[in-house]
Length: 263
Image 1: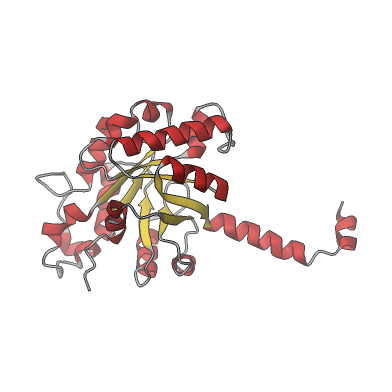
Image 2: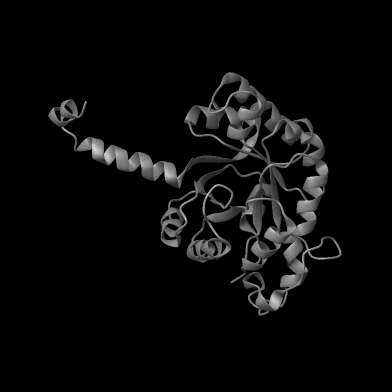
């Protein structure tokens, strides 16, 4: 089986519409449950969850038998963070808080081997290379890496076109929550001004010839951002599904009489 080809990157370049799920529960069983859901991709979020490198590895192993495409959001674009994640098998990165083209270039370089990058060779200890059992890994690794950069600040928005045009940047993801906060609307990612800014950012990315992604938690927002040009859209999170599902389950067994006594 060819485990080097990046299926997500292939679909991204084909222009496929893909729906995704945010994953933050630091548990490989939860990851496997989510992997069989039917979503096209799953974002393993190490920026805002307690996922360690070992947890990420465990989750990658759990979802490997399924069709879902794993994407990892590291805590930052630091080259040492990216190097370790590359070696455990991450091929698609969503790197947060990118503010300018220089930062974009540094990320692209960090995930590629020389001469086109600065990634260190440690294939004898790397799951990605199947511990040197994949003889063609070194010749194919660079082309199969997929770099998605997240724009979520005023600086990032200002430099969006320059970031998108960096060679080796495969796609740009617009983060409505942090961008909304930066624009003066914390906790209001559905505010009309935020929606307008996100939609225009998506259009700019597409005009640069790169795929665009976004997080949208309602069907109306999904439709709005797809019309703007987004081809891969996150539509919810495992934590949100669990929290709301547990609450709905409890509420379904709460009688009117019990409810009156609680208030």
